[in-house]
Length: 443
Image 1 (cartoon, rainbow, N blue to C red):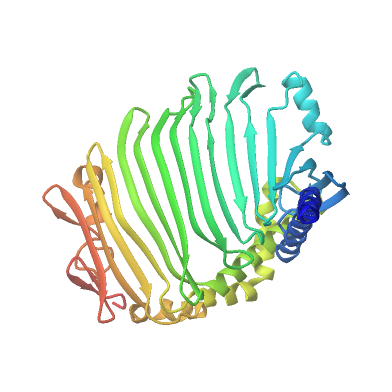
Image 2 (cartoon, rainbow, N blue to C red):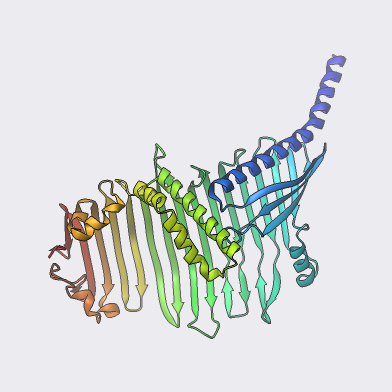
């Protein structure tokens, strides 16, 4: 019995000593897997930042890692920008706790020492569990900076993010108290959350929220803006077979005041329905690649930022066959756009409306010429139901809204109903009806 007890004690000691070592191994495996995954994505898109591990020193009870992120949010195609991170991890019995700093970045440290009296406002702590999950907490203390002789107060930030062992699911939440510049600019507090899962290399499903309590801009040069109660809820859901995704955005603003004019209670729901997953992924990759190539061309020629749009158009023309392929992949039966519960309160009255537009069958973008010759053919491809109500006092003095614009229209886009301008448009039996009358496009 005594021998068994001694053996159990020895095993306990060995396991206890081994847990911190195991935590260090898991930390190293997790970091290297994340770096490999990020660099793979960077190679595929050409625009994502790449990561390079400069030094990895794993001891028995601690680890030190130095890595470099290249092009972190810089201009597309630029490989000049870089950010060096230094992480010091302590191996514990239940995982590893790592502290990360930016001391290896001369420009950042010069700013801290010169403008913030050596007080680094940033703190990054990461936790690597024995199960492989990762969680990070990013905290930024409040600080102030001088910009063109004016003081700007940057308020505190707290951000938490966690992921599973394969980095295929992420959960995040944060709150930023905002910033202010006297009474000229006030923004915040801002809160945000995210609960997402990876569907493809470029597409994530799940829900994201964003809210901002207040935004006030009064620089004395333009009409002052005062906004309160802004919120977005953005959700992306995949079909059961994952072949299509639907994106839904709920938008709401409690009030907006522009130049002393009060606009209140804005709300709407926007939906993009049944988007082909493979084509959307292809389009995102293609767009990222064009942005990266345009950025590299601009950098090589030493052009001005204003030249970027011209170069991007040239890249788009060069990639037109691939762009058309991605577009045709998106224009499949079931694709739809929906605007629901549109509501805006104005001093003149209320604006309300809805829109539901759906493809009834696959559409080839090359048919655009055919539709230009026979526009009525469009009605065989779409379902449409749209309503909009405007206060007459807002736009009643614009004749083009209430008068027919061509012979095939029996009414204008809007008809007058008491003190309201009303639009009712729908497609029925492959015919377009506007305010109860058929519209003939071929006349």
